[in-house]
Length: 66
Image (tube, rainbow, N blue to C red; front, top):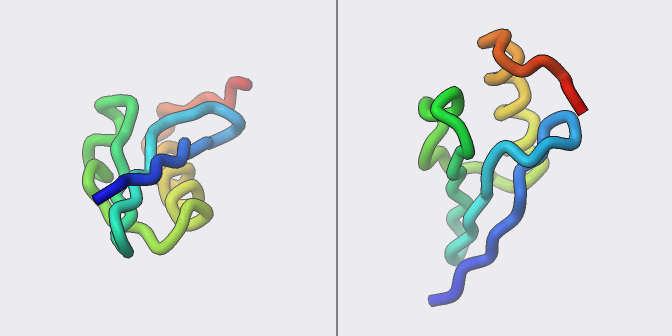
């Protein structure tokens, strides 16, 4: 089985990966701040970016640098 990998961006900063295997798209975060989303399944890249951005902003730990 092959995997496809897309970068998940928030404010033009790569914050994780979305790994696609078959129909499943799982999130792998690049920071402990995203540990709560580790392994989460998303419908597509746009949904992953939207939810990850919301998570970071709700924690107040993403300063919008970029």
